[in-house]
Length: 498
Image (cartoon, helix red, strand yellow):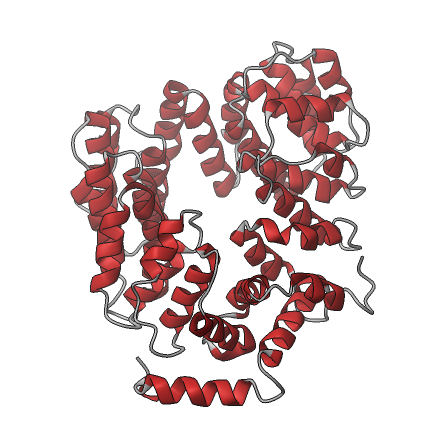
């Protein structure tokens, strides 16, 4: 805890006097209005989108009037956040198809649909409703048809064939892949011819995005085409890796064969690392002997081999996953946390706790360790909240460990997250104190007078947290002081926004 906060009563009294000089609560209210205005008004050299994303993270139904005002915003990306925010705060957690149809920007409409599909905010009935109506841009229509096929739904090939003739190559490509999945491969041949007109760099970027969609929606009929495409001479190495990953996901046997051929007989170190990651990402269906092509005596590659082999053999990969976390390679560490999610709870918890405990120490690599610890906290809390609370209680006051645990709890919708934060000694306005107060305010129905005072200080900028998190604090302050309606009136007054 910083020295200035060692005497809590004096520090609190002094801070409140300084911040509340115009009148009780005025400074916090004015600061909250500034935060909301920054979230809705674009200024040169700045972006309001991180602030909107932060407010969405609250998933607070009291935000619905705010998001409703932004649905008609002049900036299409703001409208994307508004529509997603309304879905996330809806009781049924479902997106409104009418709002999607109302987006005149094809890029914004596509972005909403991609996000809604990834976060399960759009169900099959809503997809059918959107496809049956007007107002969908061709790219969005192709995406929804691919999603339906991926969900095992019947689709009329004639509806897809019209999109395969689109002037937009991305739309035509996805439609051609959907048609191939439906047993009609001619469109894919035509699309392949059109691809040749693109410069090599644009072609690679275009195919990388298409491969991602193909993999996401399980369009396995195009696995052979993807394989042939990336085996062409002078293929970009990132595109080759993307193609190998896609074929491994769609057709494991074909993917392993492509992996072997693409790795080669004498790969250099970076290629071995890249291909080791591709193989472990493919999961436990890979034959353990496949890993024999990689040098198991190397530290990073060896740890990947040991983890992948254990998963393939059905043995315990916990030690290897922890080893990968300690090696500090971003891709390998991130995969290790994902792989831990497939283990039983006891083994998963061991990996997550190690990621949290490893956050302190050598400054080198600390940012990555903090990022991993935040993710590990969120996942551990979902399976073993008692273990997480125990680790929070043992963390030193205002330590990095305490901070990352509190950060990891921010995404939780469980009231237990607020209860866990309630155990933190809030004796000042350090980062951990502010994060704990934010969590308490997020989950509490009512705050006491002292808590309201603390929340007001943080909302006014006295809490050592980022402007992104201050946006959340500002909204919660307005909510708990019952000033939302007044705040919205002032936020949108004398502006070009709705």
